[in-house]
Image 1 (tube, rainbow, N blue to C red):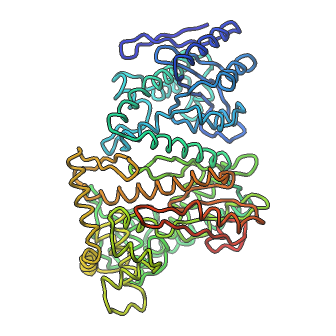
Image 2 (cartoon, rainbow, N blue to C red):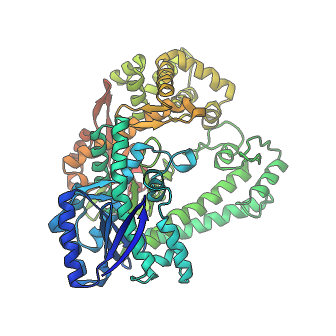
Length: 621
């Protein structure tokens, strides 16, 4: 047996590499004793991140406590695999894992251990770190990476295992991508760092637990986050069926569209639609006045500016009637969108589909500061246009199933009404009237609104309260002048004075609490000193996210998890048996219906009894 030693926080820790059957018996003895003492940290080393690829491989499984680690070479097969399976399926110790969904899915796919067996045993230090401080390093936080957390809580000189291994890969003439597969299994640095990661994880857990206790974070919130972790990992494992024939054809159409609009842009002097300098020069030559600048002082021609010049709504890409559409801006954004859709979605779908023709989105349950979920990997679902079916058409329900979605009804505004106790808004919700029409009539009493521009403006102001958008953003989204938006905001505040009082009260409490605001579920969110006004945004978004999380748990308890595919924004997407769709629609709606602060939170399910996700947005399949 090889043993490596390394100093952490003044302690000399050991990393053991079993090489024989007798070494594995020593590992079993250690595991048995360690499990009796408490939790054991666990981690895996793999050939990469493509868990569902046929070429993906599990190389090592390591276990450790605060002083010792054992790196078992799964890749060697035989007794080594038997030792891992014994440890996880027979001994079943309490586990500490950093980023548990990855290791659950690795062991599910390559060791045959269902994640349902591992999840109840697990505490995830990454989840706990987010509950301590959800900010990323660029926002003043620590982040949730094992290295920076270890440097903060354990030892400032904690090794950067991934960073140092990247240097080793270069020495072996391997890249960062090929290194995890190509590095020799016996490489000393590879084995040492595999072991150190579990030692660090084991040491990190009590530090984070103590910090959460000091902050007063409720234990039920920690349990709740781990339940969501399991449910979303199950969705990731299930994945979604890909219509590969449709994708192949769509790839060609998008390539043609990108080229067609690029040729149109060239008629206005833009040879490269991705060249900001060329676009700026051409727009100014056409008489456009560009005023918005980047932090470095350069003129901005990003998506929001170009959509405004093209007179298009940022979500629907439909004309808003605020100005004459600029043909160059229209051509540039359409060419860029087609190119982006092709590379970010279609090509990625075709490349990453598994052998069964499914793609597996990565669902990060705790991503934003407010804890909003994120979907990335094979499908960045949250960046899809809200009303477009073209990409969604590529994703199908299972054979014999139809696609269903259930969306909360104006959940952000209902959450705002509940948190701020907005009496008029709560009454309107209770009466079942259209909230945006109701608000328009309060802000613009007796003013005709034949084209619903005033309704759109009031809706934009409401979402500005929720998402922190100022008059400029609201003006751009609604095609209204800034002066008119500011007058409407003043009217909005008179109609719903409780919202401003709520923001003032929560800001005052946060300033007295070290710029921390506590949400209705007991989550502590740091505020930036220069953006304390964002407290309403943080409170509402976080509560809305937890409403969705509770709905997912309700669905799980009612046996609906096998049908779940994605949580997107405030919506659950499901694949359900065709003959049971009506019954399951009612069941999902029941799971997503609840009360918050006396305000009913309701949801509406929809299915067109067709197979593609795009059918819910207008596709005919």
